[in-house]
Amino acid sequence: MFFYCLQIIGTIFFAISGALSGYRKDFDLTGVMLIAFAVGNGGGTLRDILIGSTPVFWMQQPMYIFLTMLTGLVVFFVAEHFDVTSKAFLIADALGLGVFAITGAQKTLTFGLSPVVAIMMGVLTAVGGGIIRDVLCSEVPLILKPEIYATAALAGATVYVILHAFFPEIKYVAGIACALTVILIRLGTIMWGWQIPTPSWLKAKIR
Amino acid sequence: MFFYCLQIIGTIFFAISGALSGYRKDFDLTGVMLIAFAVGNGGGTLRDILIGSTPVFWMQQPMYIFLTMLTGLVVFFVAEHFDVTSKAFLIADALGLGVFAITGAQKTLTFGLSPVVAIMMGVLTAVGGGIIRDVLCSEVPLILKPEIYATAALAGATVYVILHAFFPEIKYVAGIACALTVILIRLGTIMWGWQIPTPSWLKAKIR
Amino acid sequence: MFFYCLQIIGTIFFAISGALSGYRKDFDLTGVMLIAFAVGNGGGTLRDILIGSTPVFWMQQPMYIFLTMLTGLVVFFVAEHFDVTSKAFLIADALGLGVFAITGAQKTLTFGLSPVVAIMMGVLTAVGGGIIRDVLCSEVPLILKPEIYATAALAGATVYVILHAFFPEIKYVAGIACALTVILIRLGTIMWGWQIPTPSWLKAKIR
Image (cartoon, rainbow over the protein chains, first blue to last red):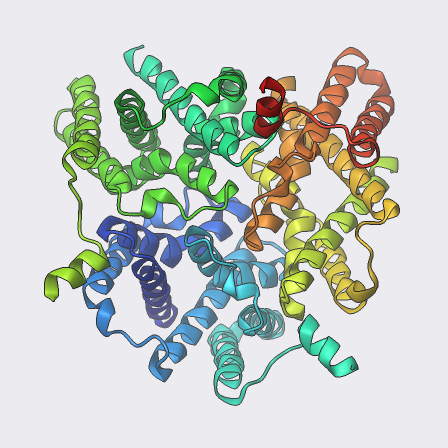
């Protein structure tokens, strides 16, 4: 139930992020609603296709269709007043990332696949929606750029899978530790300028 | 049989649209044939993957492979003389869009999935090929831009699913109503400048 | 065993190619490792999804996850000294292309699908990783551009499927003939400037 609520919140925040991108590209109302749907549900859809869980989740729970399209509709009319650089938005985004890393890893483990596969699927579920957003808007996927976005998802999914392997009875703890890891890393990036090496950083250091 | 013919025609028109995009980007002959194949069959392939109908349809009916590759071959040599802005081409394109919205919705209902899922899959089947085309040619997917392309598919699929639900015995009527809806909306856009709200239109109106 | 080794080599070379693209776009370390993973395993993943062989291959053989991520890690630190235009690199790349064309066709035939489908899947497996690379880096997929890349894969997969159909008992010969075809065509392109018609070449010839 706790995770279910988090899942809903994560989906809404990804849908908002997709709708805002479409809005900035001047997509029409339908386009904004469809990109909200695609980004909110994209990561979980890729996960379900790769592990072979078809029809994919939103076909069995159409609530996710309404939820994301409605989010797109609302964003279309209020986007003018949104401040996507606000701290609140970035924390919500980090929470969404953390939640999706958990659900991706969890569903993969439930399918009987190995822990390392669960980590990869946690990352893919978390970053998949964002990749779809950037591809549909024809931008270089931000997730792969030096913002520690993928790294946060990778670290969170790893924490979750390890804790889940050693302490299977306390999966809430594993989930919370995962979400905290992601949020901590994202906050570290945003507020204190943490970064992991990029080629240009490497070269600057050598010189 | 009627729908089968429409399906063939829709596939050919999407293949032409893909081949023309590749031609304009100066792809070589193989590239043009492959993009014709990818765009002509892309929407249905995405549909089959998401609902779990694998191997996908063109693996069971290789005719679709030959049909689209041959279309690409022909386009490569005659593209110079094509006028893609002609009314005939745009009506054919609208027909293809309508047909794919029907087949997407129909196959999804056959799989026992809910009507709202069928509407979404009608849209995805209709616009999926175009998204693949634009991604392969590295353009912002036109479908999401203010051309009422996705909206036409959404309206058509909705009409089809509703009529199919209430009058299951007259599926030809539902199909024809769907195709007419799509064609009407596309024509309205092209000839009479219909449009649905975009962010820039909204802002202009407020000022 | 022979093919297994070739498969490993092909995967590594595609992972290198993905990692180098990410490196040039200044992705961070995680980004480079993830793109190496996505490009090295992308073609086979698309193949498995389309033919319905899920969970996809790297979920059952996590070795491919480690192999590609490790390749990305190494490339990140040595990329400065790589010469991607060297003959050795291009021959290795051609070898990878040939190997993936074989494995794509082979697995499709094993699934009981028709020879023409096997050819298409050979092409898709060979070029899929490169398409994913170019989409993630937001470039026009090079594979579709006039470099006889897709053509080489198409020719190789065709040779493999035909030889396999007529001489099923000598599949090593079919595999070697396929790889040689791909390498020959790629070398012809690189060293002797072979090319197949493009629109601009066609127009130049007419004038």
